[in-house]
Length: 239
Image: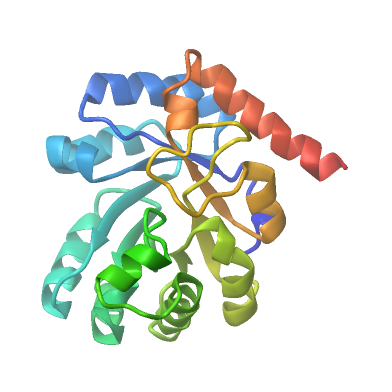
């Protein structure tokens, strides 16, 4: 899949425990984004019913659960999640081939099969952090290694930082879905992200989906912020 196939690649991250706030944000920015991302903070607070509530808004939903466990457990969790209407969910590629294949097999019979993508290296990590936990391989090499393993295991794509997009695309081909967090508009606070690019830079690199949170949800006017980012991408396409 290439980003040109998506009418709007922006998925806004609804990272809050407040269901009313999440729904308010989603309704506000919905006309200006391609979908929503909900993560562990939201899911821990509201569970399956919270997922259904966001799905009911009618936009594609990426459920950022990052499953990582023994294959049988991940298979069961994946099968349960596939009934909730999400378009995409993720698992840790570092869980290995057997775990990833178990997840793929578990959702194969779903009425509306969600795409499964593999988490490679979290965007909050850089080489110094990886070295401190015993991984001497540079982040970029680990991302590509895990992306190849995810593809071989039947996953639809991966999550990687913007800086690894081109390498993953070269390694895994044009049909492989690349979902990219760590997106910050020019001048935005980097917060806890380490490996970042602006939205136009990420699109030029070949990202399919751009996950953007605080630059939109933390803005004084989230709808206007989302609209401005979308317009920056359209301007980029026109150049």
